[in-house]
Length: 453
Figure 1 (cartoon, rainbow, N blue to C red):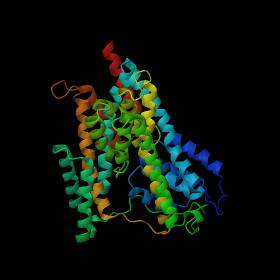
Figure 2 (cartoon, rainbow, N blue to C red):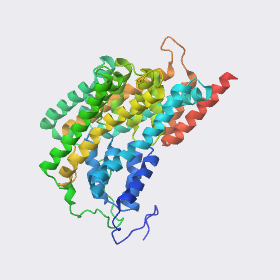
Figure 3 (spheres, one colour):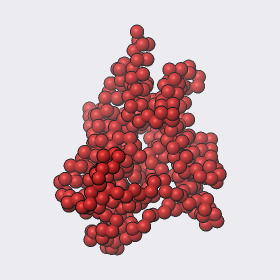
Figure 4 (cartoon, rainbow, N blue to C red):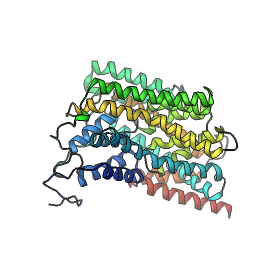
C-alpha cells in the first residue's frame, strides 16, 4: 500500500544495516543537509523513518526531544544519536563527523575565495545581494522561534527584557542565558503552567511499517546505562579537550590566536541553546568586538556563506576561524591559507566536541526511558530570551546592510529593496533558503555591474 508522498507501507522490518551502508548514508547526508535545523531534521525523518525505516517515528522524536534540550546543533546531535544507537560509539562518531566535515571543507574553500578575491567585482556583487537576504532570514528566524516560544505575556516579557539587556546595556549573552534560566527555575515553581512547553514537532504518524529500531525494540546492550561507561565517556571527552588545549598552549602560548579561539569556542559550544542564531550575538561580541578576528561586515558575509552550504548553520564559526587565522597570521605571513585552514579546524573541533560528549554520555540515560522528554521551565525561559537576542541580531545586520558606512553615510536604497523582497518571499511565499539566496545573489550581481557600466 502506498502513501500520497510515495512512501510504501510494509509489513516486515528491514534487514540489519551494515556499518559501511550506514557510513555511505551519513556521507551523503553531509552533502545534502541544507535548510537549517528544520530542513535537516525533515531530511533525516524522510530518509530514516519513512523510506529506510531504520528507526521508528516514536524513537526518532524521543531522541530529537533530548537533542533539543542540549546546547549545540540539534540536527547534528540527532544524527550522532541515531548513528550511536545503530552501531555503537564508532557509529555515532562517524554520523556526527560526516554531518560536519563536508561543510568544513566547503567553507574553508569559500572563505579563501572571499578573503583573497573579495574585491573582484563579481564576488563583491554576490555578497552585496546576499547581505540583505541574511538580514531578512534573521528577522524570519526571530518570528519563527517567537511564534513557537512566546505563548503567554510572561514569556513575551522575558524576550523583551533580553532584547533591552543586550541592545541597550550590552549585557553578555551568557549572563542573559543564566538570568533567563533563573527566572524559569523560580517561575516554574510558582506558576508551572506558564513555563510548560508543548510539543512543537507534531504528533507521531504511524503507518510506515515496522522499523529496524522499533517502538518496542529492546535497548541494545551498548545503550544501557552504567556509571562506569558514563565516567569513561566524560573522562575521554575531557582528555581530548585538555590534550588539544595543551598542544595549543605548548605551540603558540596562552595568548596565541589558536589558543584563544579554542577557549572562546569551547564556551560558545556550551551556550548554543536555541540554535545557531541564538549564539551568533555571543560569537559577534567575542570575535568582532573583543578579539577583532574579523569585522562586523565580514561576520554578515560569513553567515551568508553558512546559509548557502550544507551542514549546521553554526558552521559559520569555521568562517570566523579561517578569517581570524588569516588576518592574525596564525602560522606566519608566509602561510596565510594554512593558518586560516588550521584555525577553522581548531574552531570546529572545540565547537563540536561537547556535542559528541553530550550524546555518548547522555544517550544511555535517554534510552532508559522510552517516554517523551519534557522541557524544563528554565529551558522555556531561555528559549524566550533567545527571541529577544535574535531580534537584536536582526537590527545589527539591518544597520550594517542599510547604512554600510554608518548613520553618517548614505542609505542604501538597493539593499533596502532586496531586503524587503527577501522578507516578502520568506513570510508570504515561504520560499526556501537556497532559492532565496540564489535570487538575491543574482540581484546583487546585476546591480553591481549596472553601476560599473
